[in-house]
Length: 451
Image 1 (spheres, one colour):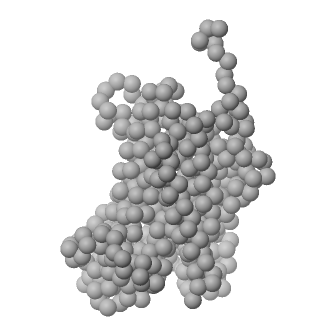
Image 2: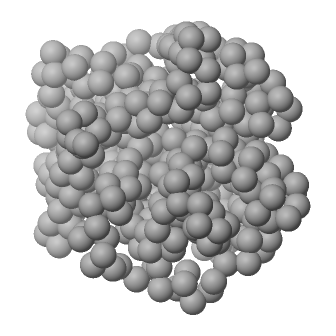
């Protein structure tokens, strides 16, 4: 038989129960060209972008409270935990990118094509809950920022966040690069705000460097351990793994072994560099908290609004509070963009159902807005703070149901061929998965049954 007319392998022969179907986000699938000639840097720039959409989930409003609490209570000590959690995230996101590039499936499609239909439905429901919880954190974060900056009542801020449906729809229709560009600009805004905050707070450089070195005190001090687990266990966002495995396929890389290998390398660089930006921002939040609140003896600052109001008098300028609020608003808006895409990917991937982008976004946002409006109306600011914590608990519950399939699929020789994880990477990936599952389990136990 002519090698150009070889029979395509069946789904079973490739390790999947079903043949691959139409990709998710079909309107942007393979829409961005990768130059075949020119320097490696030119090719890398063409591939750069998806990593920054992923990095957004690691600096969303849900992470701010734990960073602020860690810095105010324990100074710079927990910087090592932020570093460790980011290294874990870099590994898992690299695996997510590789899954999408090699198999042509995002993680949701891979789960549907591997597990039974009932199992896939359960995974879909859990993932939808996680995305709604994440969206809830973004709604509350944006509403708090609007309240702090402009005095807008929280309930109005929550309702205003529904308008971003139109923004996402317009950008997605213009092209995927527009979404990536906006996300990068907003990340740059957050980074610039906190770089200025660090300058204003005049932190102890030697204390920062010492903080990046793991300390045994973290394990021996129960209070420190609890916050450390909160930072570490809730850092990896489950929807980011689904998102990354899909959006890497927006690039027109060559469908050959060499083309896929090159795409995997560029995707790895892209997400690693982007996640180091997330590391800087999370570390900056903790550093500013340590240099202002901890230094002043204020060790009980844990809520975002408290941090905003205390920064101005401690730094001696209202600029400190304003920059904090602007960064929070940029963080909340950034996260809503990626949450939209993740919701669309999950629904299309698990159920093979396609809804118009605006309708999918509206459904996700309403699921988040309804509880936020009810809690805000009944309990005010303290209620939204508790709701923010609850959203992180839901994310922690769902995480293992995304991490385990990802490590399982990328370690499978039949599914991945020559791109399957080598033994050392397989062992490392499973170790990270077990650590994350264990820490999240402990965090959930402490949340519901701890003192």
